[in-house]
Image (cartoon, rainbow, N blue to C red; front, side, top):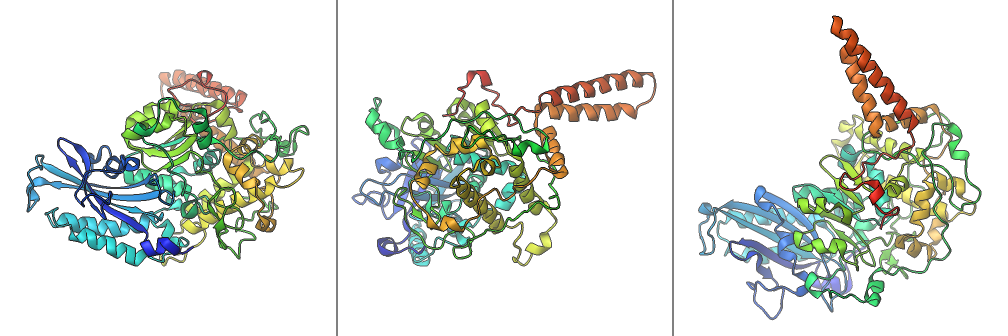
Length: 602
């Protein structure tokens, strides 16, 4: 969709802002064009109340540890504005003070730290970053920060070059690589995807900020239409000083209320660990609308690649989307219920609405939002360890460096257990990404295993899931997605909003999991490998086997004792593991015992 109407006349860029670190005042705005407050000058340090956290977002915590960094952040809309999220991109740099041509009196430290940031109406993160980085380097190369003409030129240039820019196409995803995401997280990407569908409180943690926001936004780019149109309401929060200590019930309901369900959702049925019995997908309880056993492990290590067995129909190219593109975005219109700009399939899902926040980077000054009663959930990024230590404030903590998902609630871990069909899907993605296909991508013509291809697969996953929920007597279909997961998803705000409206284009979508099919020997291998590598006892097996192997090659009297002990250890580990094969394997939060947590996540 092209920028049009008043937005086109005003241009997509709202402000160019310089934020610096003052030795006495801390982070503060030093310059803005146009002025952030119309009645004040370009060099005013004052801010609108809604944007009081801007300095701490643009110049992130711990920035002094890096020579440069990039931040994506979201600001709430200003009162009287269009009531849409303001998208921020900031480029941070620090240089030695002695290198300055003009050294002002307030420069008292050995280094100077500043950020140049763009506040925009449109979520063109990578495109804005590419332009901003060039100007930031030029601004610093002047060695004279009083030379602000280059910043005014940046404002005019950006509004001139981006005016009329479409929000479809590869430029929206510039710098966001699902391929790299899968290489790092592998099958756990699907766990993150389902976690956000459930609207849980998800905190990403890693340094520096550019890596943090890159991973978080790349995960969101897997949701059809989410980056382009799904974040407009994602930053509707109130600053700490504007939140009354005694929030009324009416105010809370205003933020977190959801549309009444169109039908009563059944209670989530208990699901045992998916056994290795090939008939498991056929055993569906008759007394539950979405019952059935189909949950499996959703651990944190990599399974072996899945080789599809002959006879299993696997169709992973988007079906019925030819008129709307790989993301199903042909005709865009205002959603009657969600208020978002939707395509003919009702996408993007209204996840980031009604108090569910998307904050790619959170400053320490925003910590209170994690426990704010008007915030029903969030997908947020942080670099400060204090966020990670407050584990009770999040349902899941994603430790990006180790590619781990820390979840304390065993019930939530059960909901996120990957079914056999899910494992096939995730393994299919991993296989295509990890294959040696570099030569295909040299000329930029690669498709399978590329970024757009991966987004297309997740688009098909969502379309098929939605279509399956519309079918009557769909217990067997829904079992492939995980019956407990589907039951929990059906009572989320995003699903109820989607279900409350009709989407005729969904008739084009074939229901059923893209990787549905009979259990095979390949699934046995995949399930066994996945379970061994991702359960704690499975890891003990690996350690015991390594110990045994080392002992066997030794000689002498001590060898017998060592081998005997190692074999006993391996036998004990195997026996213990097989007896508890049904335990979910997402890493439990070490700070909170499962018994101490509520049986259902907030």
